[in-house]
Amino acid sequence: MAKQKDIKPAITILSTRKHGLDEIKRRLKRATFDPIEMAEVEAKVREIIAAVRERGDEALVEIERQVGWKGCTVEKLRVTKEEMDTAYASVPPSLLESLCVARERLERFHQKQLPRSWFIQENGSLLGEIFRPIERVGIYVPGGLAAYPSTVLHVAVPAKVAGVKELVIVTPPDENGKVHPLVLAAAQLVGIDTVFRVGGAHAIAALAFGTQTIPKVDKIAGPSGIYPVVAKRLLYGVVGIDLLPGPSEVAVIADETAPPDWVALELLAQAEHGPDSVAVLFTPSEKLLKEVAEKVTRYLSKSPRRRYLEPALKNHSALVLTRNMDEAVMLANEGAYEHVALMVAEPMKLVGKLKYAGAIFLGSQTTVAFGDYLAGPSHVLPTAGTARFSSGLSVLDFMVRSSLVLLSEEDAKLLAEVASVLAEAEGLDAHAKALRARKKG
Image 1 (tube, one colour):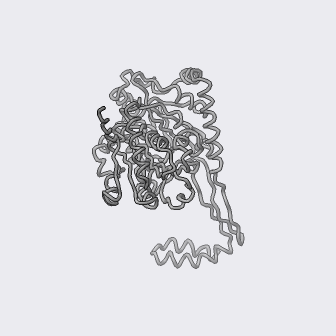
Image 2 (image 1 turned 90 degrees about the horizontal axis):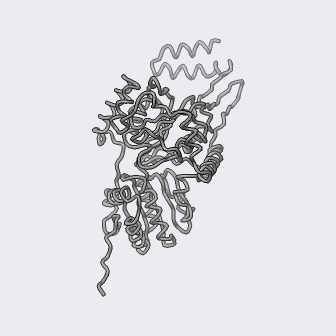
Image 3 (image 1 turned 135 degrees about the vertical axis):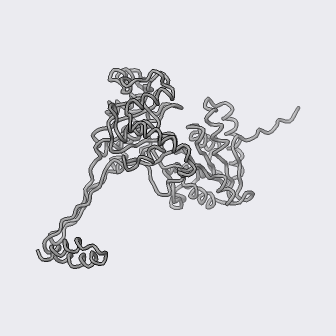
């Protein structure tokens, strides 16, 4: 009987002993939002933004026709109420129930995030902060590779909890101008009836400037592909933005107690989002690593999403054998990943060692997929290493904070002398005079 040939792993295998930490870090380095590296994309996006700013709806229609929806017209940009109602009615009751459960869990979690205005009163003076909701927000819902009703919920719910009065959705249609009924149903479920079938950088520009059909918003939120992300970055200041979420990422830290098939599926679940997704395993267990490599490879050969998985696993993912668990945590911190899954016997012991992560999932039973749908926190999270300085979407992203200062006559006279000295040191004469006027009363 002929000996069965070993199957070549579908994912890169690395070892800190063999390759060294510097080489591992280099191999795991992923695309960032560096404007120098993205100069070509940025140039195209600037052209799109300029066209929308100058020609409004006309530019939107022109670009939509170029990217695939040949029958696009100004009149068709907005999804009608009849389409919304038809979409909602078409969704099976069991699926609607699942969306309702997700909405309720998201609402409960985000209610806990609501900040309270606060005040300190002393000597007749008052200091404090007040929080108020943003007036109008645009939500970008991705399309193309899959339908994402979950994104509608994960952006709209924290915005609604924050008290945002008006929410507007933009989402890319298919080549026939259709928006997936699940997206429309989810919009109705959270009380949104303003949906536009337009995506890409031109949709972001439309929300930022406003067009004859699409209203100007105060802030834009939601995950997207590279063109809308670049558009958000370029338009920050014209409009507020949430963060710059790029391709999905997961770093799994696992020990010998983790079920190999669960670890493999954890990696595959994020990798299947698209060809640029990132899935990395850090483990000191050589036995686990080998079993995971085999299971990932075998699953890939049968996966219905192989065309997305294959490039993601080949180009952006790896299984890394570490010397110990501390080294695994160090490498995860170095990457500052969107999701970190702690598939270890005692996950709470590692939480304090993790410095940077968009979201942390504790224990083998807590798959990141729960977070993608209904765990509670929003699944809009920092990617590409931006978890070093930013956090996932929250209620606070849909609110503004104003400081309050009221000084009594007594405090004004007392502080005027001190503050005027500082004003004079900075050479600001009018500042000093305004302060001294308060001292005189």
